[in-house]
Length: 121
Image 1 (cartoon, rainbow, N blue to C red):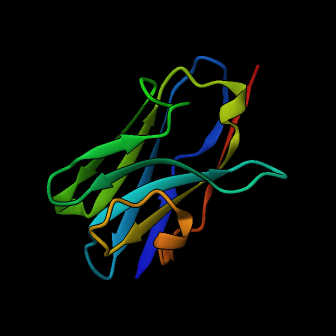
Image 2: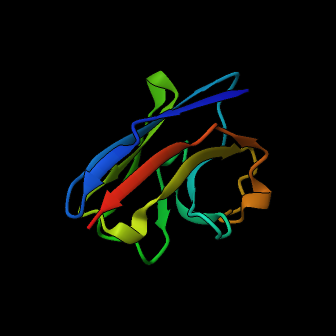
């Protein structure tokens, strides 16, 4: 299983970015994005189910971020709008085969390499 995350960068507050996560080696039940800021624990951001496209977001990004999928490309996206300096972090995509609703990093066995998002004020 390989997950290739891309799309990070340096932007100003209020700007937008779209992250991509291309998966190979199989399809999975849930695809998620996590983020980790310096000195902080890895934090759940959003997840989507592969079959139904059901989504769930952490409260701090709800209404600003949108997770979506392209089944044909086995790729998940994270559209991030109205970015804030506190969104600065390394963003990781992760997948799991469990169908149990999962927001814990421990429930995701496969991880991408991470992509840096920096939002300046």
